[in-house]
Image (cartoon, rainbow, N blue to C red; front, side, top):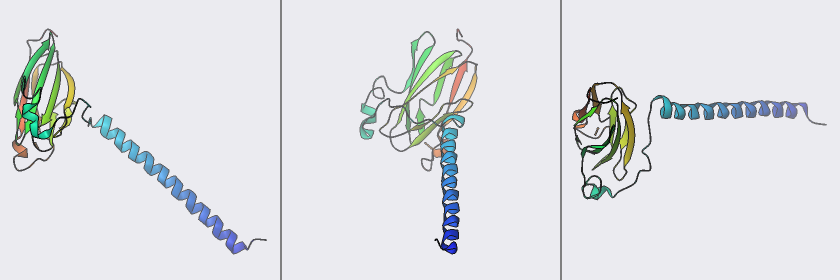
Length: 172
Ligand code: CUA
């Protein structure tokens, strides 16, 4: 025979236990949801596994040494932008491509953590010392896009920006 008081306590304990289990399940789903939201809705992307490099030798490492920062045409409608971020500038800071271009950005940081966000696009990545970041985007409409560093990187952070111009000269 079980003591009714003990039995009641056990029942209450069980209710709490179930409650906490349910709560942790809800929180797990909420965290996964937040992660999925960050990844898809806000377009935050982790750098690809494009490669790692010695952060002290960025300027001596391809493609940042050769061909070096710049805009390169790689096909009829394809461009490659080798992008160097450093405190507190982007190189190149002015990028021009024709409408319809598929542009692959290959970037890194020469010093601290920087960001690279092209306004009005899903290009929104981190530039991490020692890591090569790669992202491809097709610019369909002619126009101007500011791009900014969106990771706080020191006193000159707010002046770290550039401009990407999509000209109407593309073949579509
Ligand atoms: Cu670079 Cu903020």
